[in-house]
Image (cartoon, rainbow, N blue to C red):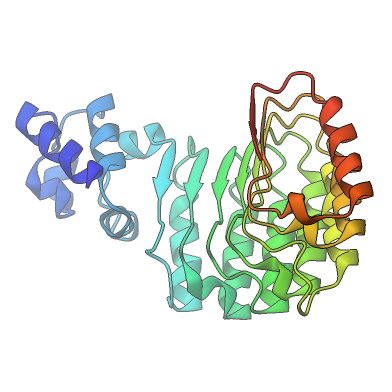
Length: 289
């Protein structure tokens, strides 16, 4: 809704490209004026479906492509063919300033190993990315798909913001381990969202895998914002202790979300461990329990 309102406002102000350009009319685009910031604002105000259409149809001027830094493809990529996915990522390579990519809510990504591999290979080429959203993609469903994504992430060493939230990783031990290994490589991360992955869930889950995530966090000393909400960490003493120990290594944290983790139900020793971990976070300005 906000994007539609912004688009209407830009149109009213007369700073949106012509309707021919919106439709991808190449002649109109070629004859248009040089790219300016208003055209970038216009593109970023489009919904994900419209952005995808323009990307696939080469409906943007080269000057505009060079200026765009963020692309929003949430909800737009589910159930696409592997061939089409490869084409989309080839197109994304034509955006040299692209640093932010939202691929969230594309549930089909977790189902097909071939599609996931295509995504992963595409991600490897977008090495300028600093902000990536992979939230709500059901990445637990296919081990091969998960491992492919994890391998792709390892190439994005410039990432500072990563969202892996709401992927139900607790349902797949191998998925959790794969992402744990990938996280260890991403040492520039300052913002990490691992919320609602059930890392402390007892059903069909290996606590050893959750503890590997905790170990990976120890490698991310640059983190300032960490979201572990909704992970039921209090359900298992060993898991709780592992994450409490990890917090001691994250002295730069200014914001920490530990809500919906059943911490009030955990073992006394685990609760004490969390308390000790929090004592080390002297720079916290935001804490959600």
